[in-house]
Length: 424
View 1 (cartoon, one colour):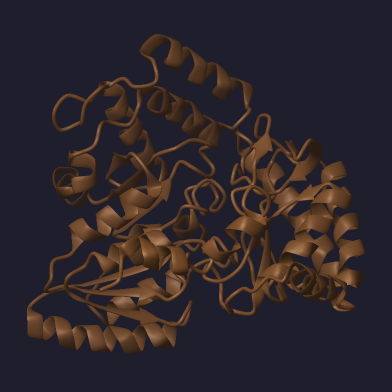
View 2: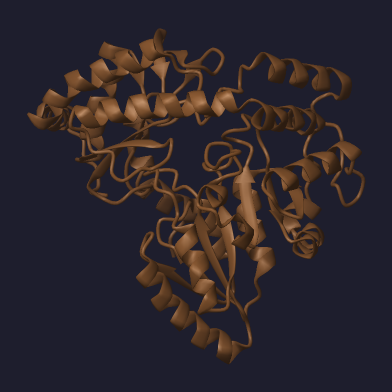
Protein backbone atom coordinates (compact mmCIF):
# COMPACT_ATOMS: atom_id res chain seq x y z
CA UNK A 1 0.00 0.00 0.00
CA UNK A 2 1.23 3.50 -0.83
CA UNK A 3 0.77 6.54 1.34
CA UNK A 4 -1.34 9.16 -0.44
CA UNK A 5 1.01 12.00 0.50
CA UNK A 6 4.04 10.01 -0.63
CA UNK A 7 2.49 9.62 -4.08
CA UNK A 8 1.74 13.34 -4.23
CA UNK A 9 5.30 14.20 -3.26
CA UNK A 10 6.73 11.88 -5.91
CA UNK A 11 4.37 13.07 -8.65
CA UNK A 12 3.31 16.71 -8.18
CA UNK A 13 1.50 16.82 -11.54
CA UNK A 14 2.33 18.18 -15.00
CA UNK A 15 2.42 21.80 -13.83
CA UNK A 16 3.37 21.15 -10.21
CA UNK A 17 6.79 19.86 -11.28
CA UNK A 18 7.66 23.42 -12.34
CA UNK A 19 6.70 24.94 -8.98
CA UNK A 20 10.23 25.54 -7.69
CA UNK A 21 11.27 26.92 -11.06
CA UNK A 22 8.32 29.09 -11.92
CA UNK A 23 5.97 29.81 -9.02
CA UNK A 24 5.45 33.52 -8.47
CA UNK A 25 6.76 34.43 -11.90
CA UNK A 26 5.50 32.11 -14.65
CA UNK A 27 2.87 30.27 -12.61
CA UNK A 28 0.82 32.27 -10.08
CA UNK A 29 2.55 35.54 -11.09
CA UNK A 30 2.16 38.37 -8.59
CA UNK A 31 1.08 41.68 -10.05
CA UNK A 32 0.51 44.93 -8.21
CA UNK A 33 -1.81 47.89 -8.49
CA UNK A 34 -5.29 48.29 -9.94
CA UNK A 35 -6.20 46.19 -12.99
CA UNK A 36 -5.59 48.12 -16.18
CA UNK A 37 -3.53 48.30 -19.37
CA UNK A 38 -0.43 48.99 -17.24
CA UNK A 39 0.40 47.25 -13.98
CA UNK A 40 3.45 46.58 -11.81
CA UNK A 41 5.25 43.23 -11.97
CA UNK A 42 8.47 42.48 -10.09
CA UNK A 43 8.76 46.19 -9.36
CA UNK A 44 8.56 47.24 -13.02
CA UNK A 45 5.72 48.71 -15.04
CA UNK A 46 4.43 46.35 -17.73
CA UNK A 47 1.77 46.59 -20.41
CA UNK A 48 -0.78 44.07 -19.18
CA UNK A 49 -2.48 41.72 -21.67
CA UNK A 50 -3.76 39.04 -19.29
CA UNK A 51 -6.99 40.42 -17.85
CA UNK A 52 -10.33 39.36 -19.30
CA UNK A 53 -11.63 42.87 -18.65
CA UNK A 54 -12.76 43.17 -22.27
CA UNK A 55 -14.82 46.33 -21.90
CA UNK A 56 -12.50 47.99 -19.40
CA UNK A 57 -15.18 48.15 -16.70
CA UNK A 58 -12.86 47.21 -13.82
CA UNK A 59 -11.89 50.85 -13.35
CA UNK A 60 -14.84 52.55 -14.98
CA UNK A 61 -15.78 55.47 -12.69
CA UNK A 62 -19.52 54.64 -12.69
CA UNK A 63 -18.80 51.01 -11.81
CA UNK A 64 -16.37 51.92 -9.03
CA UNK A 65 -18.87 54.40 -7.59
CA UNK A 66 -21.75 51.90 -7.67
CA UNK A 67 -19.66 49.11 -6.13
CA UNK A 68 -18.41 51.40 -3.36
CA UNK A 69 -21.87 52.72 -2.51
CA UNK A 70 -23.36 49.20 -2.44
CA UNK A 71 -20.54 47.94 -0.22
CA UNK A 72 -20.95 50.90 2.14
CA UNK A 73 -24.69 50.30 2.39
CA UNK A 74 -24.80 46.51 2.63
CA UNK A 75 -21.26 45.35 3.47
CA UNK A 76 -19.52 42.60 1.51
CA UNK A 77 -21.54 39.64 2.81
CA UNK A 78 -25.21 40.64 2.69
CA UNK A 79 -27.43 38.65 2.32
CA UNK A 80 -26.07 36.13 4.82
CA UNK A 81 -27.85 33.03 3.63
CA UNK A 82 -28.72 30.80 0.70
CA UNK A 83 -31.41 32.23 -1.55
CA UNK A 84 -33.68 29.25 -0.91
CA UNK A 85 -33.59 29.99 2.83
CA UNK A 86 -33.08 33.72 3.39
CA UNK A 87 -30.99 35.26 0.61
CA UNK A 88 -33.48 36.40 -2.03
CA UNK A 89 -33.88 40.13 -2.64
CA UNK A 90 -35.70 42.25 -5.18
CA UNK A 91 -32.32 43.32 -6.56
CA UNK A 92 -31.42 39.70 -7.34
CA UNK A 93 -34.71 39.26 -9.19
CA UNK A 94 -34.27 42.55 -11.04
CA UNK A 95 -30.80 41.60 -12.28
CA UNK A 96 -32.17 38.26 -13.46
CA UNK A 97 -34.99 39.96 -15.37
CA UNK A 98 -32.56 42.40 -16.99
CA UNK A 99 -30.10 39.65 -17.94
CA UNK A 100 -32.86 37.53 -19.48
CA UNK A 101 -34.04 40.47 -21.55
CA UNK A 102 -30.50 41.29 -22.66
CA UNK A 103 -29.72 37.77 -23.92
CA UNK A 104 -33.20 37.39 -25.43
CA UNK A 105 -34.46 34.64 -23.13
CA UNK A 106 -37.59 34.20 -21.02
CA UNK A 107 -35.86 33.82 -17.70
CA UNK A 108 -32.47 33.89 -15.97
CA UNK A 109 -30.97 32.72 -12.69
CA UNK A 110 -27.89 34.04 -10.89
CA UNK A 111 -24.99 31.78 -9.98
CA UNK A 112 -22.26 32.50 -7.45
CA UNK A 113 -19.35 31.37 -9.62
CA UNK A 114 -18.86 30.51 -13.27
CA UNK A 115 -16.80 27.33 -12.89
CA UNK A 116 -18.97 25.91 -10.15
CA UNK A 117 -22.12 27.07 -11.87
CA UNK A 118 -21.38 25.35 -15.16
CA UNK A 119 -20.59 21.91 -13.80
CA UNK A 120 -23.58 22.13 -11.44
CA UNK A 121 -25.87 23.07 -14.33
CA UNK A 122 -24.74 20.01 -16.27
CA UNK A 123 -25.29 17.82 -13.24
CA UNK A 124 -28.82 19.17 -12.74
CA UNK A 125 -29.88 18.88 -16.38
CA UNK A 126 -29.13 15.18 -16.91
CA UNK A 127 -29.84 11.81 -15.29
CA UNK A 128 -27.96 8.55 -15.65
CA UNK A 129 -30.24 7.65 -18.60
CA UNK A 130 -29.24 10.75 -20.58
CA UNK A 131 -26.29 11.12 -22.95
CA UNK A 132 -23.92 14.10 -23.13
CA UNK A 133 -22.13 15.03 -26.37
CA UNK A 134 -19.53 17.77 -25.99
CA UNK A 135 -16.68 19.48 -27.84
CA UNK A 136 -13.25 17.94 -27.18
CA UNK A 137 -11.75 21.40 -26.49
CA UNK A 138 -14.32 22.35 -23.89
CA UNK A 139 -13.28 24.34 -20.84
CA UNK A 140 -12.37 22.42 -17.70
CA UNK A 141 -15.65 23.41 -16.02
CA UNK A 142 -17.54 21.51 -18.72
CA UNK A 143 -15.18 18.54 -18.54
CA UNK A 144 -15.61 18.37 -14.77
CA UNK A 145 -19.38 18.64 -15.14
CA UNK A 146 -19.37 15.70 -17.54
CA UNK A 147 -17.25 13.70 -15.07
CA UNK A 148 -20.03 14.08 -12.52
CA UNK A 149 -22.48 12.50 -14.97
CA UNK A 150 -23.37 8.88 -14.20
CA UNK A 151 -24.53 8.15 -17.74
CA UNK A 152 -22.84 7.93 -21.13
CA UNK A 153 -20.90 10.78 -22.71
CA UNK A 154 -19.19 11.25 -26.07
CA UNK A 155 -16.73 13.88 -27.25
CA UNK A 156 -16.61 15.18 -30.80
CA UNK A 157 -13.56 16.65 -32.50
CA UNK A 158 -13.19 20.35 -31.90
CA UNK A 159 -15.65 22.40 -33.98
CA UNK A 160 -16.07 19.41 -36.32
CA UNK A 161 -19.71 19.14 -37.33
CA UNK A 162 -19.22 15.79 -39.09
CA UNK A 163 -17.72 14.38 -35.91
CA UNK A 164 -20.59 15.87 -33.91
CA UNK A 165 -23.15 14.23 -36.18
CA UNK A 166 -21.41 10.86 -35.93
CA UNK A 167 -21.52 11.11 -32.14
CA UNK A 168 -25.14 12.24 -32.20
CA UNK A 169 -25.92 9.03 -34.07
CA UNK A 170 -24.15 7.03 -31.36
CA UNK A 171 -25.89 9.01 -28.64
CA UNK A 172 -29.28 8.50 -30.25
CA UNK A 173 -28.88 4.72 -30.14
CA UNK A 174 -27.88 4.82 -26.48
CA UNK A 175 -30.72 7.18 -25.56
CA UNK A 176 -33.26 5.03 -27.36
CA UNK A 177 -32.12 2.01 -25.35
CA UNK A 178 -31.97 3.86 -22.02
CA UNK A 179 -35.10 5.96 -22.50
CA UNK A 180 -33.09 9.13 -21.88
CA UNK A 181 -32.34 12.26 -23.84
CA UNK A 182 -29.30 14.01 -25.35
CA UNK A 183 -27.54 17.17 -24.16
CA UNK A 184 -25.03 18.82 -26.51
CA UNK A 185 -22.54 21.19 -24.89
CA UNK A 186 -20.21 23.65 -26.59
CA UNK A 187 -18.65 27.03 -25.97
CA UNK A 188 -19.71 30.21 -27.70
CA UNK A 189 -16.06 31.29 -27.77
CA UNK A 190 -13.20 28.91 -27.00
CA UNK A 191 -11.11 30.94 -24.59
CA UNK A 192 -7.65 29.63 -25.42
CA UNK A 193 -7.59 29.77 -29.23
CA UNK A 194 -10.37 32.26 -29.83
CA UNK A 195 -12.61 30.43 -32.29
CA UNK A 196 -16.34 30.82 -32.13
CA UNK A 197 -18.22 27.59 -31.60
CA UNK A 198 -20.19 26.59 -34.69
CA UNK A 199 -23.52 27.30 -33.06
CA UNK A 200 -25.47 27.87 -36.26
CA UNK A 201 -24.37 24.52 -37.71
CA UNK A 202 -25.04 22.75 -34.43
CA UNK A 203 -28.52 24.21 -34.22
CA UNK A 204 -29.22 23.11 -37.81
CA UNK A 205 -28.71 19.50 -36.69
CA UNK A 206 -31.81 19.81 -34.52
CA UNK A 207 -33.82 19.17 -37.69
CA UNK A 208 -32.28 15.68 -37.86
CA UNK A 209 -31.62 14.77 -34.24
CA UNK A 210 -33.47 15.33 -31.00
CA UNK A 211 -31.22 17.08 -28.48
CA UNK A 212 -30.99 20.11 -26.24
CA UNK A 213 -28.14 22.61 -26.45
CA UNK A 214 -26.18 24.16 -23.57
CA UNK A 215 -23.73 26.94 -24.52
CA UNK A 216 -21.00 28.37 -22.31
CA UNK A 217 -20.59 31.89 -23.69
CA UNK A 218 -18.21 33.32 -21.10
CA UNK A 219 -16.03 35.09 -23.69
CA UNK A 220 -18.85 35.94 -26.12
CA UNK A 221 -21.20 37.73 -23.74
CA UNK A 222 -20.64 41.49 -24.05
CA UNK A 223 -18.18 41.20 -26.95
CA UNK A 224 -20.13 39.57 -29.80
CA UNK A 225 -23.44 40.28 -31.44
CA UNK A 226 -25.06 43.53 -32.50
CA UNK A 227 -26.10 44.38 -28.95
CA UNK A 228 -23.42 42.37 -27.17
CA UNK A 229 -25.80 39.52 -26.34
CA UNK A 230 -23.17 37.00 -27.37
CA UNK A 231 -22.19 34.39 -29.91
CA UNK A 232 -25.74 33.22 -30.55
CA UNK A 233 -26.76 36.74 -31.50
CA UNK A 234 -23.62 37.05 -33.65
CA UNK A 235 -24.59 33.88 -35.54
CA UNK A 236 -28.32 34.64 -35.53
CA UNK A 237 -29.33 31.51 -33.63
CA UNK A 238 -29.73 32.80 -30.08
CA UNK A 239 -33.33 31.57 -29.98
CA UNK A 240 -32.21 27.99 -30.62
CA UNK A 241 -29.84 27.85 -27.62
CA UNK A 242 -31.81 25.99 -24.96
CA UNK A 243 -29.68 26.94 -21.95
CA UNK A 244 -27.41 29.98 -22.23
CA UNK A 245 -24.62 30.36 -19.69
CA UNK A 246 -22.16 33.16 -19.05
CA UNK A 247 -19.92 34.44 -16.31
CA UNK A 248 -19.51 37.94 -14.88
CA UNK A 249 -15.72 37.47 -14.76
CA UNK A 250 -15.08 38.72 -18.30
CA UNK A 251 -17.07 41.57 -19.84
CA UNK A 252 -18.87 42.28 -16.56
CA UNK A 253 -15.60 42.74 -14.63
CA UNK A 254 -16.80 40.96 -11.52
CA UNK A 255 -17.60 37.54 -10.16
CA UNK A 256 -20.62 35.29 -10.41
CA UNK A 257 -22.51 34.00 -13.44
CA UNK A 258 -25.97 33.32 -14.80
CA UNK A 259 -28.00 30.86 -16.84
CA UNK A 260 -30.88 31.83 -19.09
CA UNK A 261 -33.52 30.03 -21.11
CA UNK A 262 -37.10 28.85 -21.10
CA UNK A 263 -38.97 29.95 -17.96
CA UNK A 264 -39.89 26.42 -16.90
CA UNK A 265 -36.35 25.09 -17.36
CA UNK A 266 -34.75 27.95 -15.44
CA UNK A 267 -37.30 27.46 -12.67
CA UNK A 268 -36.39 23.77 -12.56
CA UNK A 269 -32.70 24.63 -12.30
CA UNK A 270 -33.39 27.19 -9.60
CA UNK A 271 -34.95 24.46 -7.46
CA UNK A 272 -32.41 21.75 -8.30
CA UNK A 273 -28.95 23.34 -8.60
CA UNK A 274 -27.24 21.91 -5.51
CA UNK A 275 -24.33 24.35 -5.71
CA UNK A 276 -26.80 27.23 -5.33
CA UNK A 277 -29.33 25.70 -2.95
CA UNK A 278 -26.60 24.91 -0.44
CA UNK A 279 -24.49 28.06 -0.93
CA UNK A 280 -25.02 31.60 0.31
CA UNK A 281 -26.54 34.12 -2.06
CA UNK A 282 -24.53 36.26 -4.48
CA UNK A 283 -23.42 39.31 -2.49
CA UNK A 284 -25.34 42.55 -2.80
CA UNK A 285 -22.43 44.71 -4.06
CA UNK A 286 -22.01 42.33 -7.01
CA UNK A 287 -25.76 42.26 -7.69
CA UNK A 288 -26.18 46.03 -7.63
CA UNK A 289 -22.84 46.43 -9.39
CA UNK A 290 -24.03 43.90 -11.97
CA UNK A 291 -27.03 46.07 -12.77
CA UNK A 292 -24.73 49.04 -13.42
CA UNK A 293 -22.40 46.97 -15.60
CA UNK A 294 -25.33 45.63 -17.62
CA UNK A 295 -26.65 49.17 -18.05
CA UNK A 296 -23.28 50.18 -19.54
CA UNK A 297 -23.32 47.18 -21.88
CA UNK A 298 -26.76 48.22 -23.13
CA UNK A 299 -26.33 51.98 -23.35
CA UNK A 300 -22.67 52.52 -24.30
CA UNK A 301 -22.09 50.73 -27.63
CA UNK A 302 -19.01 52.89 -28.17
CA UNK A 303 -17.18 50.81 -25.51
CA UNK A 304 -17.58 47.60 -27.51
CA UNK A 305 -16.68 49.48 -30.69
CA UNK A 306 -13.44 50.69 -29.08
CA UNK A 307 -12.67 47.14 -27.95
CA UNK A 308 -12.98 45.81 -31.50
CA UNK A 309 -10.91 48.65 -32.91
CA UNK A 310 -8.12 47.59 -30.55
CA UNK A 311 -8.61 43.91 -31.41
CA UNK A 312 -8.17 44.57 -35.12
CA UNK A 313 -5.09 46.75 -34.61
CA UNK A 314 -3.38 44.18 -32.41
CA UNK A 315 -4.28 41.07 -34.40
CA UNK A 316 -3.55 42.58 -37.81
CA UNK A 317 -0.20 43.88 -36.56
CA UNK A 318 0.83 40.47 -35.23
CA UNK A 319 -0.21 38.71 -38.44
CA UNK A 320 1.79 41.19 -40.53
CA UNK A 321 4.88 40.22 -38.51
CA UNK A 322 4.38 36.54 -39.34
CA UNK A 323 2.89 35.30 -36.09
CA UNK A 324 0.38 32.44 -36.20
CA UNK A 325 -2.90 33.45 -34.56
CA UNK A 326 -4.70 30.35 -35.76
CA UNK A 327 -8.27 30.98 -36.86
CA UNK A 328 -9.39 33.24 -34.04
CA UNK A 329 -12.47 35.26 -34.96
CA UNK A 330 -12.97 36.83 -31.54
CA UNK A 331 -11.17 39.18 -29.16
CA UNK A 332 -9.02 36.33 -27.83
CA UNK A 333 -5.60 36.74 -29.45
CA UNK A 334 -3.53 33.53 -29.33
CA UNK A 335 0.07 33.62 -30.57
CA UNK A 336 0.89 29.96 -31.25
CA UNK A 337 4.39 28.58 -31.52
CA UNK A 338 5.95 25.15 -31.30
CA UNK A 339 8.11 24.41 -28.29
CA UNK A 340 8.37 23.06 -24.77
CA UNK A 341 7.40 24.74 -21.47
CA UNK A 342 10.92 25.74 -20.40
CA UNK A 343 11.65 27.32 -23.79
CA UNK A 344 8.41 29.26 -23.43
CA UNK A 345 9.50 30.68 -20.09
CA UNK A 346 12.64 32.23 -21.57
CA UNK A 347 10.59 33.90 -24.29
CA UNK A 348 8.09 35.21 -21.76
CA UNK A 349 10.84 36.43 -19.43
CA UNK A 350 12.45 38.32 -22.30
CA UNK A 351 9.12 39.99 -23.06
CA UNK A 352 8.57 40.96 -19.43
CA UNK A 353 12.10 41.96 -18.39
CA UNK A 354 13.42 43.62 -21.54
CA UNK A 355 10.31 44.93 -23.30
CA UNK A 356 7.82 45.50 -20.46
CA UNK A 357 5.12 43.26 -21.95
CA UNK A 358 3.13 40.94 -19.69
CA UNK A 359 1.22 38.17 -21.43
CA UNK A 360 0.09 34.77 -20.23
CA UNK A 361 1.92 31.66 -21.35
CA UNK A 362 -0.18 28.52 -21.78
CA UNK A 363 1.16 24.99 -22.16
CA UNK A 364 -0.13 21.43 -21.84
CA UNK A 365 -2.43 20.24 -20.28
CA UNK A 366 -4.45 23.37 -21.10
CA UNK A 367 -3.51 23.09 -24.80
CA UNK A 368 -2.09 20.15 -26.84
CA UNK A 369 1.43 18.85 -26.19
CA UNK A 370 4.31 20.46 -28.08
CA UNK A 371 2.57 23.82 -28.37
CA UNK A 372 3.22 27.11 -26.62
CA UNK A 373 0.46 29.67 -26.62
CA UNK A 374 0.93 33.30 -25.69
CA UNK A 375 -2.57 34.61 -25.05
CA UNK A 376 -3.21 38.33 -25.32
CA UNK A 377 -6.55 39.82 -24.28
CA UNK A 378 -7.06 43.28 -25.83
CA UNK A 379 -9.51 45.50 -23.98
CA UNK A 380 -11.31 48.74 -24.60
CA UNK A 381 -8.86 50.40 -22.19
CA UNK A 382 -5.69 49.74 -24.19
CA UNK A 383 -4.30 52.71 -26.12
CA UNK A 384 -2.68 52.91 -29.55
CA UNK A 385 0.63 53.59 -27.79
CA UNK A 386 0.38 50.36 -25.80
CA UNK A 387 -0.59 48.38 -28.89
CA UNK A 388 2.31 49.80 -30.90
CA UNK A 389 4.81 49.17 -28.10
CA UNK A 390 3.61 45.57 -27.91
CA UNK A 391 3.87 45.04 -31.66
CA UNK A 392 7.41 46.42 -31.61
CA UNK A 393 8.36 44.04 -28.81
CA UNK A 394 6.94 41.02 -30.63
CA UNK A 395 8.88 42.03 -33.74
CA UNK A 396 12.12 41.82 -31.75
CA UNK A 397 11.37 38.45 -30.17
CA UNK A 398 10.28 36.89 -33.47
CA UNK A 399 13.85 36.81 -34.80
CA UNK A 400 15.11 35.21 -31.58
CA UNK A 401 12.32 32.66 -31.69
CA UNK A 402 12.88 31.39 -35.22
CA UNK A 403 16.67 31.33 -34.78
CA UNK A 404 16.41 29.11 -31.70
CA UNK A 405 17.76 31.58 -29.13
CA UNK A 406 15.18 30.67 -26.48
CA UNK A 407 15.53 26.96 -27.14
CA UNK A 408 19.29 27.17 -26.62
CA UNK A 409 18.87 29.21 -23.44
CA UNK A 410 16.47 26.58 -22.08
CA UNK A 411 18.85 23.72 -22.89
CA UNK A 412 21.82 25.48 -21.24
CA UNK A 413 19.78 26.40 -18.17
CA UNK A 414 18.55 22.86 -17.60
CA UNK A 415 22.08 21.53 -18.01
CA UNK A 416 23.71 24.12 -15.73
CA UNK A 417 21.09 23.74 -13.00
CA UNK A 418 21.02 19.95 -13.36
CA UNK A 419 17.25 20.05 -13.68
CA UNK A 420 15.06 17.23 -14.88
CA UNK A 421 11.45 17.64 -15.96
CA UNK A 422 9.13 14.91 -17.08
CA UNK A 423 7.98 15.27 -20.68
CA UNK A 424 4.42 16.57 -20.88
